[in-house]
Length: 172
Image 1 (cartoon, rainbow, N blue to C red):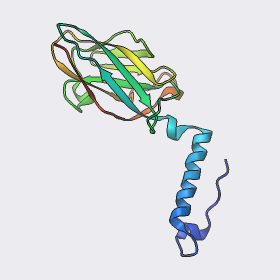
Image 2 (cartoon, rainbow, N blue to C red):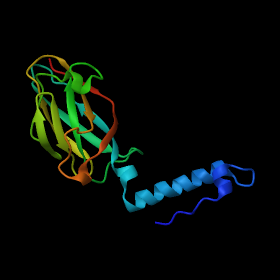
Image 3 (cartoon, helix red, strand yellow):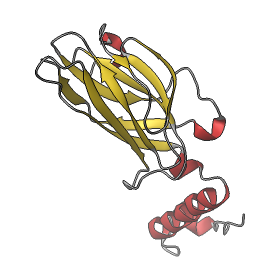
């Protein structure tokens, strides 16, 4: 990896060197070099889009889908491990996991571990995950995703979840 060196004028911001523009260009070179050599900047930080269908008429099972995307909104091109939480309170996450929701067999990706109100999941090679969410209680539940605090099955699949907008599902 070769990155052009900085001159003293570029670093000091004197009038003889266009400091801001040059520094920005140099930083872009660094990010490009890191991406080309390791992929750490773009492929280990994700946003997760999650959706869970409502279950009405006494139904207990709903479809849950999640998609891990890179920071420009494109689907990930690798398997990703993250935590899915079912919460009683909006934005509460793991502080208020639901005592009734369980996660069923995955249709896309896999469930590495789960309990009532949470599941550590691994997506398909395109960042997609799908399973069922079951709840025998008539209630509203918020679903969101977060970084798996218990680790991942392989370092290459571990990601940091930057953001996830919670989705509300209702059982009635």
